[in-house]
Amino acid sequence: MRKVSDYAIQLREKQKVRRIYGMLEGQFKKYFVLAERAKGVTGENLLQLLERRLDNTIFRLGFACSRTQARQFVRHNHFLVNGKKVNIPSYFVSVNDIITLKEKSRKNIAITESLESVARRGVPAWLELNHKEYKGTVKALPDRQEITMPIQEQLIVELYSK
Image 1 (tube, rainbow, N blue to C red):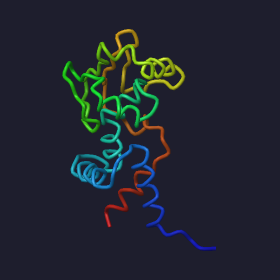
Image 2: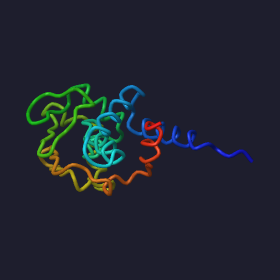
Image 3: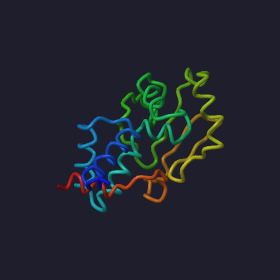
Image 4: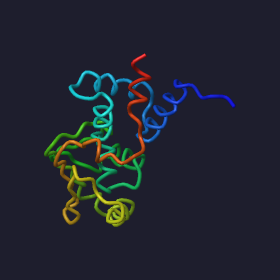
């Protein structure tokens, strides 16, 4: 039996995380550099940065069924952040940001179906959803414990630290 090298395992983990968040290598590397420069644990900083992306936040709030769909909704100007149009999926949300669905977009069938299914999936503790007003609020920054995906961020840190 052939033993899989540590490098191959680390590479697979990085590719898995890139695929989950729908990112290319260059952008992912920039996020790693930002995470490395920030205070705290690099792996946790990286996951926090990825979770704070606008497209991911919209997915987590339940306005979209997938991150890909959320990215498309952002690109098509369906959302306002603090009352301003933002059509950049990689925009970082901050604490107390209010993400609102535009009035015109409230009739969008895909968005209404996603909001109906959010009750089953749930909204993370760092976010708050006001279903009736079609808006979400960022209450806090995400903690590692709130990111429930099976990600081994330490493998990614080891890969980039070589």
